[in-house]
Structure formats: structure tokens, C-alpha cells
Amino acid sequence: MGIKYFDTTDQTNRLFYPDWIIKLDDGRICILDTKGGNTASSQETKDKAEELQRRINLLNQTSKIKYCGGIVIFANGQWYINDCAEYNYSGSDLSSLGWKTLAWKSL
View 1 (cartoon, rainbow, N blue to C red):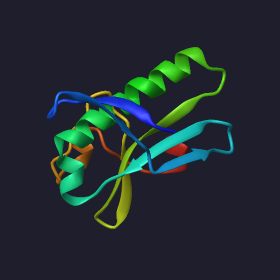
View 2: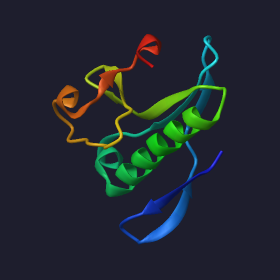
View 3: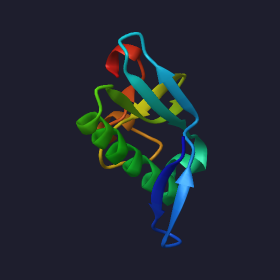
View 4: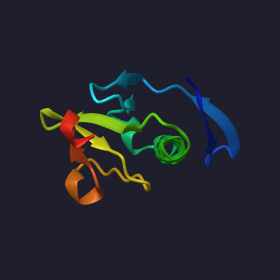
């Protein structure tokens, strides 16, 4: 599944393909895109993350199936997810930027 987003650096529309699409036991569809290191802090990732959240919100408004997801990273020995409308990443103090420990019950 490709997701169309606007690349603010190149000022053009592009497609990106999330790394994981998972159906959870409760029937929700979870869309995840993994990042790490420099890619987590790039403007391109911010553009993708914010479009992914807009798309998930739209799907939840128009579909009987419920959706969740976001950008996920592995840091400090555990997985974190950012499912905020506004994406922020600095590499430190993730909880203050809206990142949560990834646990299926938190989705």
C-alpha cells in the first residue's frame, strides 16, 4: 500500500511504502514505518509521519475497520512509537516529544 505525501524539501508529491501492515487480534489494522539513526530525524520522515497520521484519521472516519500506527524506532533497548499528529524526534527524551513505549495494548 503506497501512501502519497508532500515532500516539503523537494516541494513535490511522492509515495512511500510503510514497512509493516499488521492486523491485530481486535480487528484493527496497524500501519508501521520503522526508522533509526539519522532517518528518524529527517524532514522526509516528518513529512511521512504526519501524512500517515492524517491518513489513519481519515480511514477511521470513513471505514468500519479501525486503524492505528505510526513511526517506530528501536532505542535504549526497546521499541517506541510516535503516533502524534505532529512528529518530533531529537534522539533523546522521547517521552517529552510524544513517543510511547510500543506495546500492542498501547495501540
